[in-house]
Length: 379
Image (cartoon, rainbow, N blue to C red):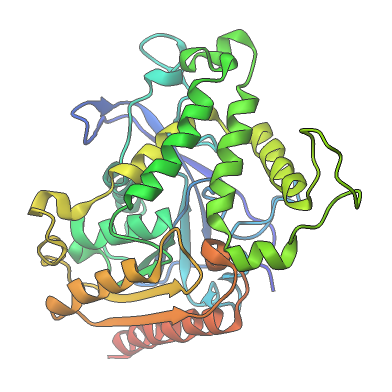
């Protein structure tokens, strides 16, 4: 059952947020949504961190836009794996996004014009610091869990390192402690598609009344290829031809070409080009072991949470090897870790889909989290 109609909320922060790049962002807003009811001692809160092109809209629908279903609606809701009859779930839109929180499309108070490319490059750690401020405003001193998939999993991991006393469980799905060189390369190709689009105008395309659609289309097409497995693409599209015959031109011959162009076209209508640049850079920069000479075990030494990690066998973007690397580093620090490697055919996108084993894994884990909360309440 869906949680039904939900409403986004805005929270204003006039105090500057120090950023990892040495600057600060002043006078910003965060868009967020909540689901379920916060209990009396505020011990049942779960923070859900979003991935690249997602947002605060984790579950439910909007009154005026019933087709806009939350991106993890299959995971979060009454009776679902993350049960909103038990937990108070929070989704926060990251700074730099184009879905409500302060980002490049917003007016820079210093100039009276949109930030555009002058919006500061933010990091996963900056997002976590902003989320921590929102939690403080909501009076939540400790989350029952912080959870995320992909880039959201990086944020959950960063929470466990940066605020070890502020979460009891850390749920990291289809993620990695750092991007591989291949991943960084894919991100840069996508960024170059945007940066070299004539309509980009150095990031100030808003003033020109245009959108660098061609760059966004190609960026999305490149990214989308990496989210799917070869087997999944073969099963869905194979070498099927749209017309049944070769057209001997450079238009759309194959069904996979049609699909990718459709995804690119759709993406270019709603996503901001500067936001895409920012978020892919945040992905590239995440590497908590960097400050510890590359030693991931040392980077995780201060963590206190219990961990659930899950990966998918056909996810070549954030492969199971990266999750096992995290597991080994946590075990070396004697942390309590549960790990599942799920044999699913859908590649990286599997973390968004309805694999029964995956949903059961999360359901049973959160039942355990809830049992801990209930036990403490009855003590």
